[in-house]
Length: 224
Image 1 (spheres, rainbow, N blue to C red):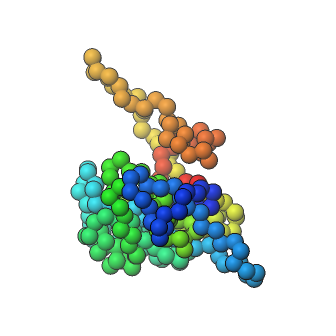
Image 2 (cartoon, one colour):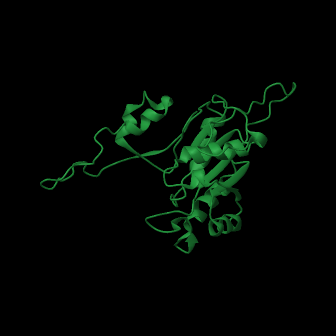
Image 3 (cartoon, rainbow, N blue to C red):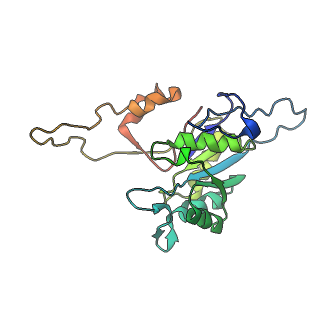
């Protein structure tokens, strides 16, 4: 689950808060300050599963059946059974995925063509979702391809964010495969040697170079 908490990034407001054409906009601030005195309203924690219809390796893999259940159904069950989310969403551009998501009790965000491209990142889709849904304060990005995710995993994440003060929580698993690769005579290697490269895009992770030795797992996070 990716935990993205809003508040630090701003952009020029768009009509109705919707993203403009072109590259997805930066996250717009959603401040709850100045709403009067009294008990502070708890943050709205939303589960978000990104499931576009353009899977290349296995077409529509997110709704392929695993042990009789659509792949996305396993994580939606975990999210709903955890009881920690005020809302559970699926971000998709495909009608069949939308129908399956609704069958499992999730709400659906129809993502734009821009955030459905092969070149679009998960962060692009998350930011678009947040800019459409101003009621959401924290979003947990749950990977659709993690059928072994258990509700207790999500409960622990929510506890760390709400009770222990963490603004980002993610899971990792250690990689055990051999990293060397064979290069045929006359060939060129395209293997990435600098394993921390993906971390440099997010300043919050620059100091955590040790993460480069791990493979991101079912729960991960990005703090803006």
